[in-house]
Length: 349
Image 1 (tube, rainbow, N blue to C red):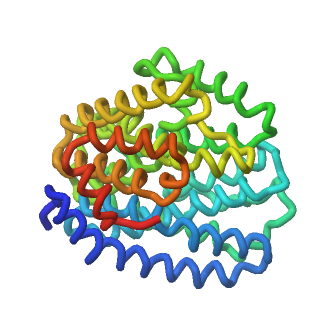
Image 2 (spheres, helix red, strand yellow):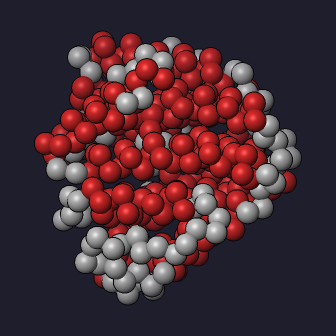
């Protein structure tokens, strides 16, 4: 299988192969979710699949890097993202503000990357626990795929590092409102010396993406990962590509988050000019970092597709400030970003 190197090729592969396969896997998980005994857990599991399908569709594009193993890669990506989206719903819609509860739930994302891990009651700190084995089935499915990766032990520490960032973010951002920012700042300070120049809320954004995990698993399934490439992928995706991904997500959600009183990392920029400059900084560094990877053009297309897909979202048109920023970012990001922005062909929110 050839890795797409043009916008049209990426669109065709996504439309003809990736999305149908994603929807097939999601249909199976939806049927499984319908059998969850607890009405609340069933409701959140189904809602996460129905409302966040585009997360799986976008992430699954990385499955193409696995070449002949692309279907297995997509199976992992869809399943892992389904865990993430389900837990996000449980934490967002929960009466609990208990960090122990959130940490216990998110242990499932670490276990999904740990073949042979012991069965755990991820719901042990909450009343609703009767999920009929749904979350454990998701975990086991991820494990079954990564068991097929030759020398998996070599990439496991890097996958766990990225997953650990993600899980810690989910704990810190869902606790009591007054505790969120202090916790996030303290967390950032423990990593600050190891990172390029970032602000605490940008570090949090970088932690909130699963793209690096998907990229690593896809490469590894095709037997392409040396120690050097593992480090290259991690350092390209964390912080720059993952940060760009999640900052774009927060950029378009500002109005919604303001109304709901939700944490939004874009609120912490000094003003619109400051935000625009920092977004350009992430775009430039994301482009520079992936230029060191194999299939450079594919990774560049993904960066530009992120811009096009997010900035063409209907939410943007309801927010004049965001629309102004979107236009400037697209204008400065090249023809491929403009293609994805104007065509809206890749995936739809």
